[in-house]
Amino acid sequence: MSSDKIEEKKCCENTKCECTKCECTKCECTKCECTKCECTKCECTKSKDVVHEDDDDLLKEYADTLYIKLKESFPHETVTKSNLFSLIRIAMEEADRMNDLRGSQKKELVIRVVHVALEDYILDDLNSVEINFLVDNFVDLIIDNFVDIDFGNLHINESRKQKIRTFFKKLCPCMN
View 1 (tube, helix red, strand yellow):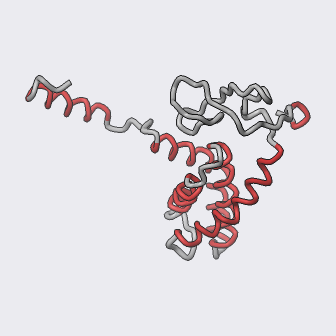
View 2 (cartoon, one colour):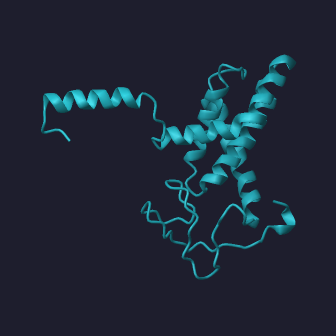
View 3 (tube, one colour):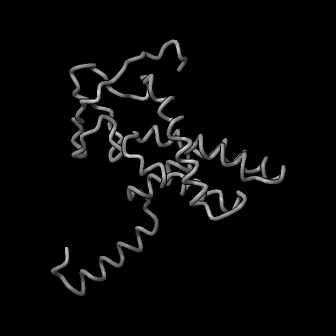
């Protein structure tokens, strides 16, 4: 969507989520990714199509803090293909502690900080090209998958789990 079509609205702080999926009190809840808002002061929806003037400044403010925390938490001296996912995971964990940011802001923040970290942590040009390719093309997907895992939306070995449940139900019919 081009920037001239994006409507600019400034949101107020007194918003309450009317989403029925969760019991949050934020417009853009990270629990359910809802964008409903019953705020009557600004009639915002805080959707991804709305530009919030303070978002970019807010992210710049948090980027330095997150990068410092990332440097303290990341145990390696260089970023390689084998520890890239650890770098992203640690950045996400640190960003998740920033409770006043929405989920989409945290994602953008992590992407920015990972790019800065790559400039500082990659030593040779060969790794730089490969790792930057991975980050440029897959970091959104990697973050989304980590979020899905965190929310319990990863369903690996479901058939095995079902077999175990069936086995225990046969042993103890009182289990439901």
